[in-house]
Length: 274
Image 1 (cartoon, rainbow, N blue to C red):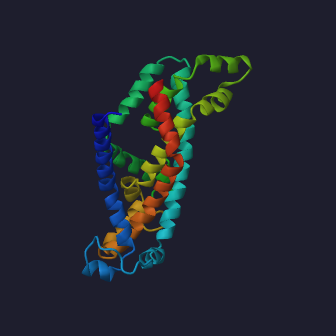
Image 2 (tube, rainbow, N blue to C red):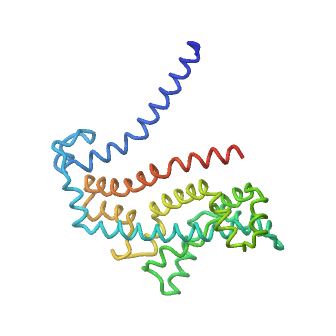
Image 3 (cartoon, helix red, strand yellow):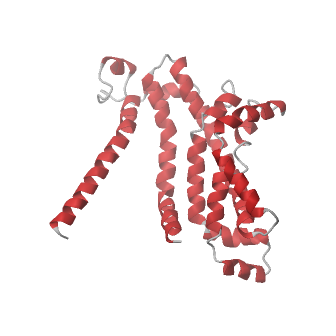
């Protein structure tokens, strides 16, 4: 490697290192704040190390009933994830491999709804849930999101179209029905993209704020985002407590990303090669 090439590599890594520090610094500051007592935070610098570190903010979350919000959020996310994967796979396979009149036109009309801002659908969805008697219930939180989405179906359809048709024909010759083909051929061949979709769904639903805020009231079905926002007013902007709640909300997403990150990278590589 020449000196000019080496200097370019060093420069690239230096820029990436600076970007990583700038990205991680707010999370580190939030973690340190969550381990700081309210008295020290009020008297000292926001970036000062906790002296001594304390878990009082996390026990305060338990006393505020924050644990229920974690359970509700996890349950809502799990149900939506199962529904998204199931119905998106079925719809994407239909658009990718089945022949029926108006298939492509229907697909592109459906995908065009991606251009409609989510805020536009809040009021109609609210009226539908209220008239069905589902306001402030678990089903009101999950029903609008568990039957697939235009983005998920578009993503899977494009991936399914790259699966060799010979595999599907061979399964048909062996007597496999459509559901057998999906379960035993399409899904195993699409694990990287399904993991990517699962990660996107988990992150988006875990962080969902507007719809839970609109459709629920009280603490029975309050999710993490709404509970965290409520801490800012309920406890007069006690930022050490808010940062503890934020840390609790972020840690599960970090764990999921670390566990599934290699599959996401693989799906990007495979998709790029294809």
